[in-house]
Length: 237
Image (cartoon, rainbow, N blue to C red; front, side, top):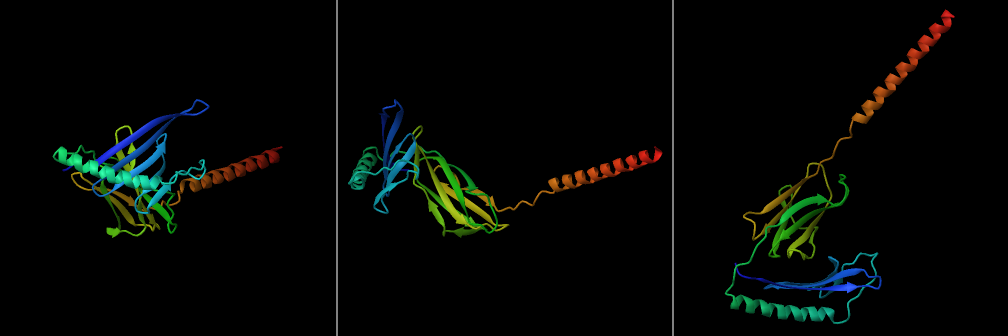
């Protein structure tokens, strides 16, 4: 395997007037076919360059303070990607295509919301801890490939070990008995990794009803018994 990824991580310390320390981070990486340019703070992304849409994408939540990149930030990211690819080719040639250290991904699948039959929902396939940052994700429904309603997040880097994470999501309307799978292919895996999600609707539990019924019956029996002895007592008097 040849070296196909080059990564540059820039970090800095920001001190506010209230003496709170924050960690600023900038990530730039490229392969022979794509690239990544991301900026964040305290481990959370603020925004990234979307080379498909041709602009900077802000990913801060709605409740965060507004933040905009200065004009020319995206154009600079594009220029840096070209420079990154040049460095990559020089590195590959100079090191005679050295082997790349690999780390296999871990994967889990779960619904975004509580599953209710006939109600739209989203399945999330979380893929973490992999390197290099290139993988393929496939979805199936009842053993048939699904592409409609599928989307993937940007790559996310773990600055502690430089492994990567990514979400793949599938919009679906659950029906009882349906089975969905998320399959991940990565160079560090001997074979594809598949996770399954079965749509199961739990039947209402009979326990509370039974206990309530038994309790009510015993209560009525107790009242009847008490009334019987009360009447008998009055008759004796």
